[in-house]
Amino acid sequence: MSHPEPTPAGATVEEAFAAHYGEGAVRKIARAPAGDVLRGIAAYRGSEHWHLVTLGLAGVVPARRDGGPEPAPFAQELTLLAPAADAPPSWAFALLDGAARTAIAVGRPFHAGARLAPGAPVDGAGSGLVALGIRVDPLVQTTGPDLVLQAVGITVGEHLLMQRVGTDLVLERLAARDPLLRTDPARA
Image 1: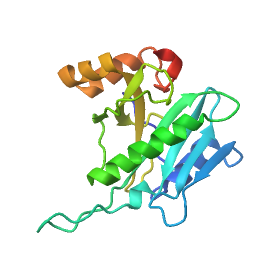
Image 2: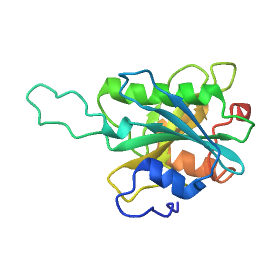
Image 3: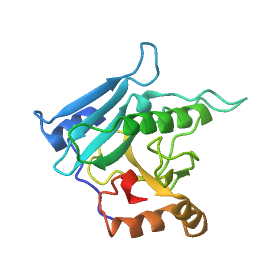
Image 4: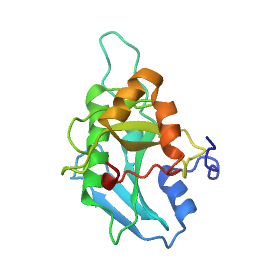
């Protein structure tokens, strides 16, 4: 898999997205409530997709475990690519928020190759996409310390296959049909 071109040294995730989509890009932001660990989720309009990204997850420092060393910040933001529409889908904001909160609650950041099975349809309705696979975001990365990881909606069958052969292999096969791996509830 090819990796996206990094942005200038030390660029933040928000600067990386601005560089990729342009300063005048259509952008929607869902702000988190005051005092929340996440600042919100931004959505950038691409030609054939919405690209959502958490804001603030990179700075979260998990709780210290009994007698363990001082933990490092998560140093990652999560993204989700959704099909193009007039506006980014509300379920995508909720899904990305839920995935970020799961990482915070567990006290461990995600990594490429991780998977998360929420159990309910990712769109909150009747989709067959009921779990998430995690990979390096194919469009945006920073040269700073923060990693940008994409959450990809998957079916029960794909989740079970990931358990047998690995998340990366299954996502690679799915990317043959859609290189961006947009989470589209209509897919399943």
